[in-house]
Image (tube, rainbow, N blue to C red):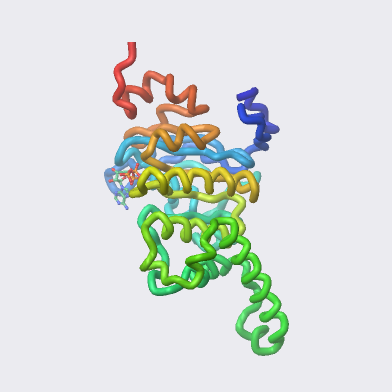
Length: 273
Ligand SMILES: Nc1ncnc2c1ncn2[C@@H]1O[C@H](COP(=O)(O)OP(=O)(O)OP(=O)(O)O)[C@@H](O)[C@H]1O
């Protein structure tokens, strides 16, 4: 990686990363007596694939929920697109361009792939009830545009063959792909992935890794993910934050993090000389 100038940097594979999109500053989050996050700061840059890793209970999901606006930390600030975020409801944050997937798939199991992905368009739907009654044409036009966008995602994720299938009948790996599609339907600037490879076999992990890289490349989406699978994280991420017991113990490129003795001790469990 080149220098970390405010304007960005160039990745080893030649991608241009931009300035800071999201910054969390000195975040502390407590649940009663449990300190889930202790004074953590890091940034996510425009166009990056940024990972947050750490052992069980390290605070990764809590951090994703802070970024997502679901949890409000007792201390610290969240900055997005150059502005300090006020306390907001998650749907307002979704409107700002942040979408996410969940560790335990949160799809409507009885609904088709197509309809599930359509639900991801809700932040893009402007025609309200009265305008639908008074101005049917506008609502119809919006519906057509939403359908077109969803079809584009279905093609992109190579799930045409299952577009009509109720998602509850799909294998796990495909359900995860549909969930990615639903998040993409919101056209996020920042996409949060909560353990996108959890429970997958090797082939499914390879497919998901390829789709994450392609989303970043073709849609230009900035991606932050939390993941247990170290191999996957190191392969696809530009920079990695390492958490342990609610603290940040490492931050840098995969090579830097891999060689960091504190990370090796805490997470990799490999003895270092
Ligand atoms: N809603 C909650 N109420 C109370 N404690 C919580 C809550 N959510 C998380 N915690 C605690 O905060 C700490 C961090 O949990 P968190 O789920 O963020 O870690 P994690 O790194 O995502 O773990 P895992 O990899 O197992 O999902 C843990 O001690 C956990 O028990």
